[in-house]
Length: 222
Image (cartoon, rainbow, N blue to C red; front, top):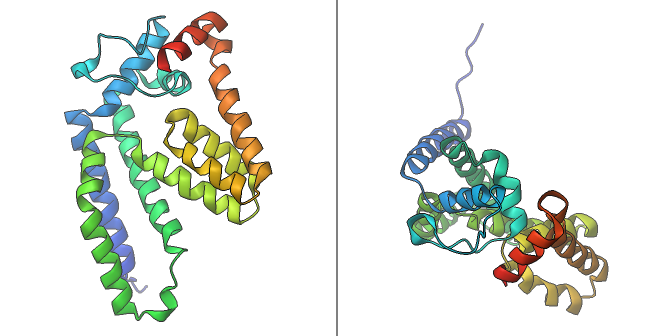
């Protein structure tokens, strides 16, 4: 039986996966912003104000009540949670790269030119990537959510676009900048679903933590 040798593409993929896992373990050991998110989840579970001190390392929590709520099941397993989030972030970064490639016509480039383009992009993005990996942030999730939402939008999947974009806006307000674009281009169904999702995720925690406590936290957040 002949043993098939791994081609270069598969070998590079395996190496990158190994690097991502090792890097995730190292960053989880050192800790990062995800410590803040999990601390907010523990404070939420204890009925405390997640937007007021004390904070871990003096860094304030700026994200939504819903985000803290869904992290509660992972808040007692910090190291494992941070490893999985870091690995997940690498996957989202890869997916974002694939989505961005769709906006470029690579057919006019040779394979060598494509390779040079990819290496150049990675080189100039390396500092941004390494910083966000080291800090275990949600930046890669937000970046992916924006481009994946646009991907759904241009494919006519307006409900999926609205659900994902609404989730991203709930986590952190930054992706709300896409709403004027949806309105201007007449994507009213996607705009409605996004708005509905944002509102829904603001009030949804009331089911689990109580209406008054949720309202109090929302007032503290804004």
